[in-house]
Length: 98
Image 1 (cartoon, rainbow, N blue to C red):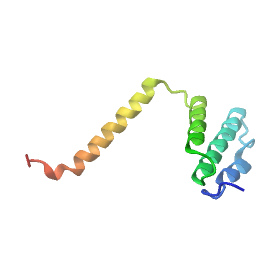
Image 2 (cartoon, one colour):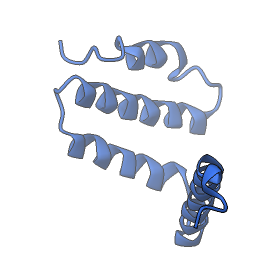
Image 3 (cartoon, rainbow, N blue to C red):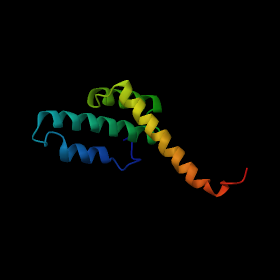
Image 4 (cartoon, helix red, strand yellow):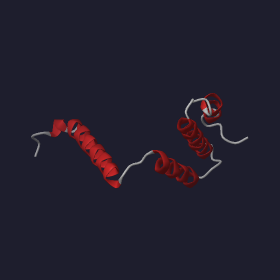
């Protein structure tokens, strides 16, 4: 058996939640999530390539995260601002040393 990096958590999630959500869309999402978790575990266990995992991530996000390029750009800009603020705090001790 392959996998094991995350103790086969995807199997336990699948057993407990797939087809038990009392909602057809949520049941489908849980199936897709378990596939994603499976591919993550197999990648981290060196049974799949990172490319295989990344393709699964892309498929999952396209299906379940209806984001536009503008949404993604806003997330990126927000992360840049957050990182900039953290670095400015970290190097504040240099203030006045020019």
